[in-house]
Image 1 (spheres, helix red, strand yellow):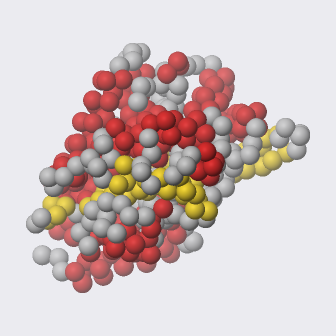
Image 2: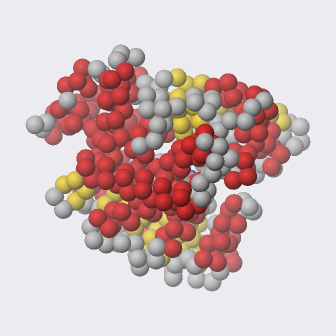
Image 3: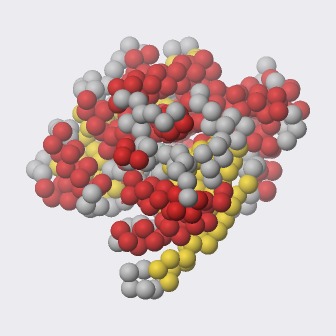
Amino acid sequence: MVTKTTHRKEVDQFMVGLRKRNPYETEFHQAVEEVVEAVMPWYLQHEEYRNERILERVTEPDRIVSFRITWETDTSDIEVNRGWRVQFNHVLGPYKGGLRFHPTVNQSVLKFLGFEQIFKNSLTGLPMGGAKGGSNFDPKGKSDREVMRFCQSFMSELHRHIGEDIDIPAGDIGVGSREISYLFAQYMRMRNRWAGVITGKSLAYGGSEVRREATGYGCVYFCENMLNHFGDSLRNKNVAISGSGNVAIYAAEKALQMGARVITLSDSGGFVHIKNGINEDQLKFVQDLKERRRGRISEFADKYRGVDFHANLRPWDVSCQVAMPCATQNELDAKDAKSLIGNGVIAVSEGANMPLTVEAVHMFADRKVLHAPGKASNAGGVAVSGLEQSQNSIRFSWSREEVDRRLRTIMAEIHQQCILHGAEIGHVDYVTGANVAGFKKVADTMIAYGVL
Ligand code: NDP
Ligand code: 2IT
């Protein structure tokens, strides 16, 4: 039996070492601490994991490639950015994970994302290791040609480090179908070969049905699984969603299809409150505004009556039963959690990676709010990426119905694994369940491989 004090002491001791080895990498520390806290009681009961120093080994990336990206603006100025690929762990399969282009990207952010990806990919049941990459490049306000030149320069270096059986990048914040096309084309040009080396491709050249929608849809499927497990459902629930990018838009679409009312969306400028819930036409407008016109969410409120824009605020003060943070890390803090709890939230399903601060995670746990961590609830995106790889390998494309059916099954199986390792009397601790289930497979495989 592991007491709470031993547990805390072991976590703290491990984290002191990790912080010392990785100074200033606060996002990485946060992601590691969540996993270590969740798995420690189980870890301490299994001497073999400890003897093999699995925690020390799994928190050290296999390698990090860092490189310069030089590109030319439309006015012929020279710009210099930094790029990275963090290849974290490939015991379960080739490295797999997205690329993020955002000014806040640094090594700490990519290490946290790469670390999360190991356990998320493990949960999908598909043979994928964990990686992440990206650049501090800001695509906002750049012309298509500038983005193209940046992507070409980025891939001129990255192509050396990836491959369909080595490392397969995909999209993330700031990397959507436009960027994927430029990156993929440059890979082909550099190597003179077609290979399924990137996922999230367009349907015309090897992409999968439902990949675009997969993260958002998967987040809603997972949430429905949680509610169904307790005899409830999304029907007629008020759902607050943050973000208005790829994940948020398709989470909203699926929530709407399942009979919920989506009452908020947001971007870095503020949030919109749609009092009666967004309808299909309005969602199409937002989709076009964000995907094609690259506009601001405030323009949605300008166009429709009954839609209010709240500048520089996040959506967590509105009254809702379900919250889906789908924008970025640490976008929901203790104050927001208090407000959501006060308004009667029953479920939080993370579309984004690590959207909750540590305090917010603990507050939802104390109040027994059903809380799905991103590594479980946003795994639909990488799962369909895995299915895209399968289709590329067999040179065949499955129908939309087939891919959606497989996505639903994978999300239901992840939910089952969370119950297996996180069930309590009258409650499920999804954070513990997801972390233990994801970690166990990686740890067992590392032991089977010997000392590497
Ligand atoms: P997009 O670039 O399509 O959209 C990002 C959205 O989040 C935009 O609305 C953006 O607003 C907002 N946002 C980004 N950074 C910030 C910030 N610092 N403060 C406030 N708002 C911000 O990205 P995705 O939808 O693909 O990704 C969203 C989240 O989901 C990320 O955490 C990502 O890691 C995660 N995720 C994505 C997957 C995928 O398949 N795409 C898979 C699994 C997880 P603005 O436009 O104003 O910047
Ligand atoms: O965070 C994520 O899981 C992603 N951005 C998707 C990764 C992928 O390889 O599809």
